[in-house]
Length: 519
Image (tube, helix red, strand yellow):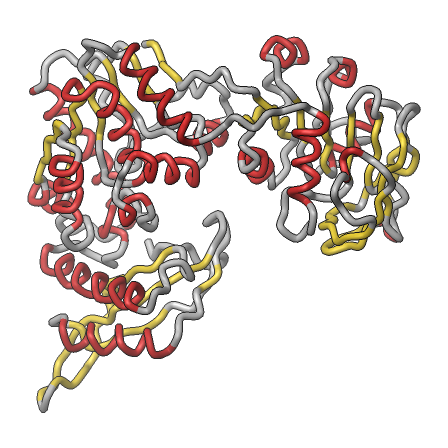
């Protein structure tokens, strides 16, 4: 099976990953300068491959190791003689010094963590920056003696070499992290490296990507039958509109409505893609089929597996009706490729509603038009394509849908109760114009029932939990401090407008120790 990727003749910068926690952030910061960056594990690409690809520059990431530990990630020293500008960050800076026979030391009194004042000497890397500014440090090891041919270009009170350079070879190293917002002029450091040192032009622009991608697939997929599993999520939606603009009705989208979506969401997806874009959309209303499989199931993992397996079966049934399909489209995005650990992503990414793709359907090609993009870039492409704002900027929604927000057994009645409560909460967030304050917010129908009073009557109903979190990456998350009046309005409306709910609570647990979802 052939896998078709979005090609690019744009200038590229390589982010060579040595296990740093900010590797994706570095690439995103580079792309913010309209320069395309891609991440490769240090042990997955050779110096010769780097030279053949023609990267304009290389950035070594940080990492948790010590360079003088033989078990730590090292690299071929010939990279420093490849004629390609290099910027090392933190561990990457120490690795450059180590490879060039500089001296690396570890000392308690030289360690620095957090915001640190650093001072610079004259250097292209620090153009248009003050001589003193705040940077973000996170290190115990430090460069004690720079290698021959390198000059110290920045220092702190504790670190004699906060940055060094070999201007002749265009090799630079900084002990601090320019990619994090805590470094005052971090963006300027990266900008100087990209434009003053690597001679980049900054031609990675989203409007060019959209235009080039449509042109590419209109040529490559002409006359072929193409299938896409549309969930209504951001990734599959953008992929669908891109391909629709490229090949029109030769694209068929299968939207499996498993009955576990939010209120009116299935209708919204159908209206958007069939109505607004005129796409060839098959909506499969499979609520009864899914609820039948989920009857009596309370374990969260069993729920997920059942939903994933049943999605495959439904998708498979619909695909068979269409006859021979040449191409399958997937909404794989760049973080999926990175996390797979394989630059060419040899394993097909499972659809987010799926535990795998149907093996009984044969495709000649797999097309992944978004595999070069980060999520924020996918959203930008969606806006460029004219996809409604509320869909492009929709908050994350789990693949199993409301199944993991109904605690215990799932029934049609419980789903309707939760849909109504969740819709009210989201409406109150919107009314208060707080969508940009919190990154994800939703209601959970717990399996706890308690006594309440409605009118003069005693009731015995469910407890709904409201959840809102603020996060940059969803790896960690803080519970959002929503205004009490917003929570009060949501609680009052839910208990008055939604039957069978007698109590509303607000989840004030961060991640960790909790997860964002309850199941």
